[in-house]
Length: 287
Ligand SMILES: Cc1cc2nc3c(=O)[nH]c(=O)nc-3n(C[C@H](O)[C@H](O)[C@H](O)COP(=O)(O)OP(=O)(O)OC[C@H]3O[C@@H](n4cnc5c(N)ncnc54)[C@H](O)[C@@H]3O)c2cc1C
Image (cartoon, rainbow, N blue to C red; front, side):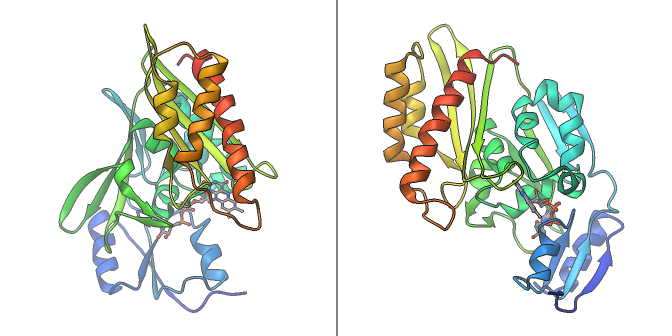
């Protein structure tokens, strides 16, 4: 299929992008890597009147260590982040997740900001951001604001972005010597969206793990924190009884959807398998 006709404009600056989006009267869409948007146009799942291409907007494509944070410009390609020594050293959870995002050809064009803005419930990066306590910097004609990832994702492909606003940057706390991370997902084939996945972050303390954040993807309408399981992992030796207890708590934390890919029961089972794998990583990993 071919897309319905649309107009195209290339923004020269952020201000120019805001102007163009305003001219679109709610019928304009931002074009970043195009890896999801163009497919949805071709399938006629969406038919915007205007595409505002932000690929020429300066200063949106850097990765930098900013004090205690790692900052990603919205236009950073997923493959650039995957190869970045800054990401490998200071944001290792994101480095682990990126190799599971689609295929290399898609990651060469797909952007960090595009993945966050799309808010696919089975995507890796939104869940990583929630697990890390990251934040999203949003800009619009009225100014800039920052939103915690946990508050940014509202529902199925639904975010806190208002019409005319753009994601300009994403920030996550940089790893410290006490940081512990875990990542695992199960997909039918490498590169497919996950049937279920889990991103985890924690802090090693004298009494075991503290500040545990277990964030599942592919099992709800948005990234899902498993708070009951988190509480059972924290503050003690990660022995078999503790892990079994945490897996049992997932029954209360998760209410996975049923679809052609997997039943609710299968997803629940997969979530338990993932938790077991990730707890092992949390107890072994060091930044
Ligand atoms: C076959 C296939 C498999 C895939 N598998 C996976 C996978 O396993 N995991 C995964 O996470 N992703 C997967 N993807 C999606 C891929 O990662 C996309 O690149 C990504 O989701 C969107 O990034 P993009 O830069 O291409 O955004 P685009 O396609 O350009 O845009 C996507 C949406 O975000 C909006 N948008 C983009 N940038 C901004 C911004 N800066 N501010 C505000 N709105 C913005 C657009 O308007 C649009 O609505 C897959 C895609 C394909 C085609």
